[in-house]
Image 1 (cartoon, rainbow, N blue to C red):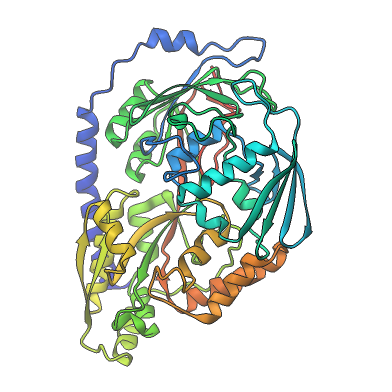
Image 2 (tube, helix red, strand yellow):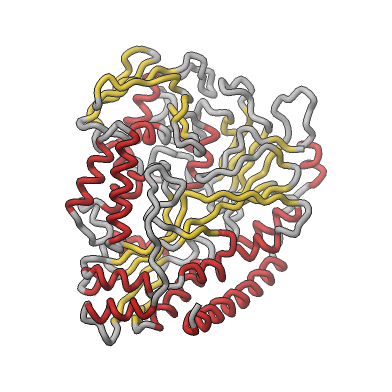
Amino acid sequence: MNETSKAITQQILSRRNIIKGSTALAGGLALAPAFSSATRVAANQTPASGAPTGELVVSLPARIVALDALGAQGAEESTRVAAAHIFDTLVIRDEETGEYLPSLATGWETPEPTSWIFTLRDDAIFHDGTPVGAADVVASLEYLLEAKGPLAPLWAALDTIEAQDDLTVHIQTTTPLGTILANVALLSVAPAAKINEEGFFNQPIGSGPFRVESYKPDQELVLEATSDYWGGAPGVQTLRFRDIPEISARVTALTTGEIDFTYQLPPDQLTDLAGNADLTITSKPSYRYYFIWLNAQTEAFSDVRVRQAMIHALDIPTISDALMQDSAELMDAPIPSTIFGYAPQTPYAYDPEKAKELLAEAGYEGGLETDMIWAPGSSPQDREIAQAMFSYWDAVGIKVTDRQSERAQWLDDLLALNWEMDFQTNGVVTGDADFVLRRLYHSSANRTGYANPDLDKLLDDAAASVDQEERKSLYADACKLIWDEAVGIYPFTLVQSFIARNNVQGFTPTASYPVFNKVTVE
């Protein structure tokens, strides 16, 4: 670490300590909602029969604003968490192996590259007692497409979907689509007879391990166990999601026992909670990561040397150690290591002199002025990370105007390419590289200002191939091109830390979002 980095590190740590003190004070003053410990203790008794019993109370990092997992909120993490318990999908992805496993579909085949046939299980029933059939899968996908939400573009190559019989679904695409299994892993299946009824998603019916008992948007979702679920009854009788978005209030609720489980807390809070004997913390690298895009349509960032200089100017390991502690892992690719298609690259070294040389070669010997848009509050420590980067860039003559704004304004500017740099986090909802790389970096998407026909071909070929090994190879080439061209800066993947009270048993940490089907409470 050179003297410049040491000085900046001290600034980072000073800011962190000030904020930690403020957060601690806020946490001490937070008032938890009324809570009856007698009620919770009675509810959490585990019977000898092993049937669903007790209540698990969870507070997610963001409010559950909708239960429509096929519509406008279909990619929102809180909606997907709820949907994972209410609905079934055709397949599920094993995070450890990356393979897709049967769920509603017992099997599938591809008689030709543009044709997929799924055979459904015959013992799945909706919460209203009606059987799940091929017509329900067809209606659910048609609803998703009609809603034109964030998941609809995944199906751009769809030609037709039809029910060949009660338990057989045929999907035909216009071109080969290697992401079909990833896509149907997100297709929540609802009853065809009711999905289009007004208000259906206010209290939706699925075939998952829990049914909706009550839902108050921005307040609480209460689910009850489905004892005759085809996949086996869940561990708890009641799964209650309570909305407590304020971090200090959520931490207080956890430590007092008002809630049993939460996640995505800032590193400083995790450090404090680690010493609490009533809590257990488990962690896993996640699908979420920080990145900074460099708008290649601007004069300065149209030059790859300037883009590379922006990376060499940052001491990313020091920023991570100082601010993220154990809550992040350094990235060596434009997608997290947890994603299908990940391929490691050679990290850019922290080298401020190299950054200055590259700037001078590109005609910016005296430095340059630029700006960065971002919306505070999207992920832990984002404000401190932004300030640290500004300091590092300033040290090599790059003056950055801070254009932080509310999320709505930030999103408008982002989509209009009204920025020179953009700082944010992203989650790879499908666990597949296509969701990020083709959706965001293909020139037709026009999201970063960067366009490269060679990259377009790699991404198109990877999406069209049904050979998963071939797709891996193509994504490896795409990762290398994006990394070498410095289309963006990819500092670290967020490590997902899940915090549970010790009465919670059987939880398995995930890279995507938590699932509580097999959790029990004591």
